[in-house]
Length: 136
Image 1: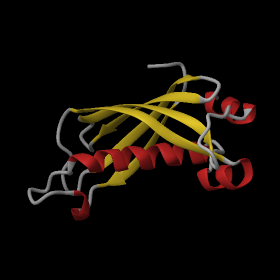
Image 2: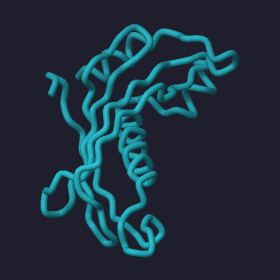
Image 3: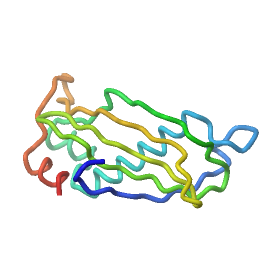
Image 4: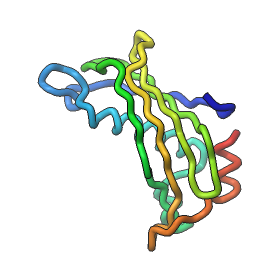
């Protein structure tokens, strides 16, 4: 993908994530991807509650192109990766993959995200230190 490192997180599929057939409901994939992105950003110093409180900044998804490959099922052990693809002054593109315990690719998503001022939703530049931390 890009020259940026890939971050991986492990999650388990529980009954609450599935439909009556034990298959993960389609909207839940976005929840797993969101959780992995949030943990990745947190590990890189981008704690969303602190950003809002201290910098008046929020991070928002502006587009998500999700591709479903195979179903995730109840009790699957998921590995969800996040990888920065492109970073601009006030936005970033993040590619994510979801695999099961057999390393089967279940879904991918390309996320476009932007930083906004929390009080008026105007675009704001990412702080330089944060940009540097994300590119390590």
